[in-house]
Image (tube, rainbow over all chains, first blue to last red; front, top):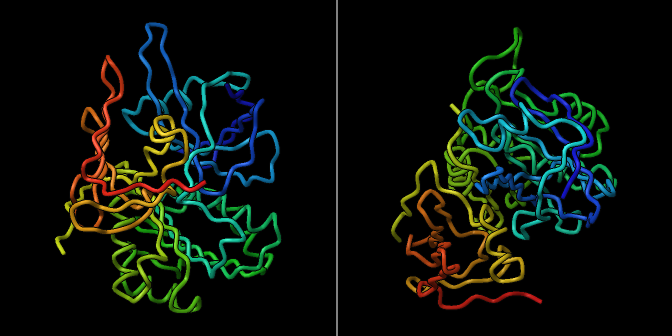
Length: 238
Length: 91
């Protein structure tokens, strides 16, 4: 059982939850926890949530949850759960979609929407260990307000330690926006990948259509398929 | 090579890592596998997962063949693995 020790708004639809874990074990960045809710009548439902924090935070993890319309677990977390509540969790889980400083680089991270969450664990781990692995994050959001961790990403980029963040805003852009304003395509992938050389280590997470588009595009521009790891999380919440 | 038939509900096997770990007692996403149909080798995490049916289906990302099927029944968990030539779980 985990105890909710903190709740923070990230965007209008996304919140981060700090979970205190009595039997904490260090996770590997990219891993997730399964969260199970059980009703009084025994009906139970389970969802996987990526860990957003790095393993350097002892005794607790942070998960970042987007409110899914018609969802069963995320509306509970958003509308009902409060600090002090206990929830059933199991983890850390998964050994495939993980990156540690020892995994090497250069690193190309591609996120769509809340697909940023497991990649943020990698970015935070990279910062906490003072790694200088060249890293570029291509992050697709609909609108400026939808960018999760916007301030933290800006601060981490300002450290100039080899992390660069490239945003694309697919639906609405602020006045004077000079960045990308379209869905991820081969030309964009090619431009973002170029400074990292021909065979960066790639992690892609987001809605299934974005993940497949980006993975296929990278293979088309010559990135070896075995360097690409994907985590599809299903339909985008339209 | 036939293109796999994916849709917007297709997931990676990582999405069912918890169930696999409960069944096999080890993390399976990093385990090596070989598709019995086309011979493709790759980590279980690279397989495509379909979770909207009553059970869970894992397919080969190269040839789309069904590799593993798992379903919870009142009498227990049923695992069908005839589409897998081997699984190698690292120590």
